Amino acid sequence: MGENLDPGLLYIDGSYTLAQLRARSLEHVLNVRKLDGRWPRVFSVHPIDNYLSYETDGAAFGPPERVQLDPGHVFLRGRFGWRAWLQKATPLNFLVGQIALVRHLVKVVRHEKLQAVRAGDPLLCGLLGLAVAKLTGRPLMIRVNGNNDALRQATGKAIMPRLFRTEKVERFVERLVLSRADSVLVPSENYRQFALSKGADPTRCHEVRYGNLIDPRHTAPVEGRVPLDDPRLTERPFMLYIGRLEALKHSEDCLEVLSRLVAEGQDVALCYAGDGSQRLDLEARSVALGLGDRVHFLGNQTQDALSRMVPMCACILSPITGRALTEVAFGEASIVAYDLDWQKELVIDGASGLMVPARDVDAMVQAAHRILQDPALAEHLGKGARARAYEMLDPELQTELEIAAYDTMLKAKA
Image (cartoon, rainbow, N blue to C red; front, side):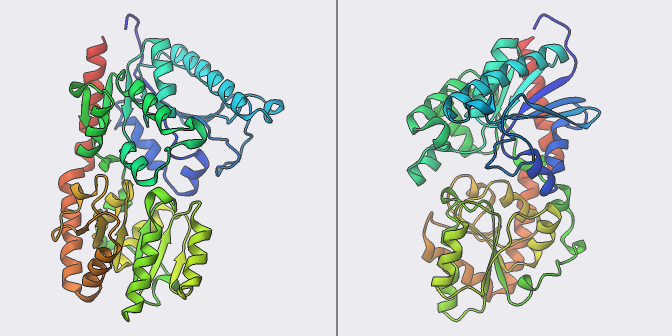
């Protein structure tokens, strides 16, 4: 790269705002970015951390806010728009704001002599990361956070419709970003194939799974976890869904599973741990089905609460889940999952869970029924899930693989 640079990383990620990270005790997600000291200095960036419709506690317009998390970690809270007086011209305000953010990040990278740029997705974060990398001459690493083609096919909608408007534009951006990335991290074979379909160089794709992102409370022995004192979790056996309540997650299918099990005479409940735009519809639907006292909307939960809740549940319903599927596997939960996305790589039917065809509610009902009626099967699947999680996602190994991916990228760029 031609100049003496210090070990430092610019990490652009829009998964959680700083307020969300703090509220849900997700500090581990931030701390792991240092990779056991491989990056003694990290500048984390959320492009629109202060967008008013998010869980936030700051203004939506203006320059990024700098928050010092610890001596080696700075969080830059990007704004939704450039200036408050432009808020009636929302698209223009947002565009100018993101351009201003790129200029700010370029200055940070140059002034701090950071070595690399990392982006957490191939859409907005990837686009920003590509711009900063090209303007500074730093190598760019992209993490593929989902098979966006499969999600668009399932929902018939763009991933970020308010930003990119159409699926065609999103596919263009993904190809632009992934084909130019110096390194691509893929957490599963499914996601690798998506990256390759967008032009990613197969020699630059590195498989690094979710393991090191998992809060240690989820990998702790199940026997030592103290159950939560919550009557909603103790009045009857309950099935648990963890994730966003959004159409692309098919969380509504879990409600149909409960309805049919209750109709069969099962005394069981359903808990939703998460929130999203579908919540009001799901609440109304549960009342219409006469399930009001059996469906509990727990909202977003802390990592401590989730780690203690998982061993209490009768089974996990996973229509399509990301990192949470890993967390429940480490928690020895018996899992029923759709054959969607990467789930079949972790859930081996009959060994580490029960796998059913995608969107086949009848099959999910039957699988849940088997687990509810057979404690020995539930225990077998739970222990198998934890064993499979360690086999695939050992946190220490994933950290080693991620460090190796960075080292390979920097060596190639030198």
